[in-house]
Structure formats: structure tokens, C-alpha cells
Length: 106
Length: 121
Image (cartoon, rainbow over all chains, first blue to last red; front, side):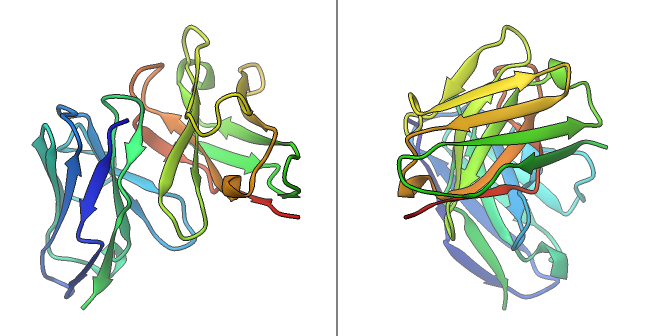
């Protein structure tokens, strides 16, 4: 199985600032990488697929980059509604998720 | 608008069985792969099983293979998960998720609200 590792586990950022979340795969997944946002008590929501393509309705302040084994989710000008847990997921070989990064208000 | 509504979550004893359902609407159900993804309390996400939209293929995570069975009723736009020989570690919220294609691309672009399954004596 392909293991997905996210860092940091918790990220504290002030509203209006930029957040940078990392995801590393144990082997290459090409660009078959998705990002999800999950708020407490809610289902996950697809943000990014293909490593860098925003899903329908996702604001432009969310951007993804990377390929192979190293990926980044960047959120510019953090809004109050962006504080949540973020998961990366590879779909090059079945589907496996990272353990999540909790983005909290500083 | 895509809507997925799970039902059937319950408290069940170890070794017991349970069947989850997911009623889908807002898209052409038969043409998309559908999956179950679970989340143990306070933990991350784990893919459980997929039923493709073409070919009728089914796939399972190693942790549930041989105990869980996925099925779908395209005439009634419903996905099912039959769970047996349940263990404490199966305790989780089970999400029904629509994939973005008929098969081979497990990008989960729509999710239900989840059904809680608790395995405990």
C-alpha cells in the first residue's frame, strides 16, 4: 500500500495570512493526488484533484502543487471558514489518505 | 444537486451483522463508481469498498475483505454495504461517496452525511 504522510499535524495561522500544508507519498503517485477539507461534524469536501485542479466551486485562494511524492496545499488570505482539518489522498493505486493536518486559528 | 443519504447505522455486538444503505439523487447513478469510506472516532479517513459504474466490479480494503460486501441497485439509485463478523475496530462513521468517473479514478467528489456504526457488547 502507498502510505501518505502529512505535515505538520497541527498548523496555527492568523486570519488573512497564508497556510502551507505538506503531503508526502511513500512512492510516486504521479499527479494522482487530491485534497479534502473536513469541518467538525461534517463530511469531507473535495478541494483539489490532479494535484492542482480546483474542484467545482472552490475559491481561488486554494491552490495545489507537486508531483511524484511531494505535494503542497496552499491557502492564501485565510478566512474564518478555512480553519478545519485537511486530508490528502492518493488515487494512483486504490485510495489511501494521509492522517490529516489540523489548521487552527493563531 | 448531488445528494447522498446514508441509513442503517446502529449499535451492534461483536460478531454481528449490519446493512447500510445510501440513497442517491441528482446525477445518473448507474454511470458512476460508488464507494464507502469510513472514519473511526477522532481518526482519519479509510477507504473501505468500491462498486464500479461499468463492468460491475467490486473492490475491498484488506481490513474488510471477506467480511463486507458492497452492492448497488441502479433501478432505485441505492448503494449498499453488507457488514458481517463485525469487530470493535469497525466502529466508525461510514460515508457513502460518489466517484468522479465510472471506474479507476477514486476521486470522491460528493459525500453523504455519514452513518454511525458502533460495535460493542
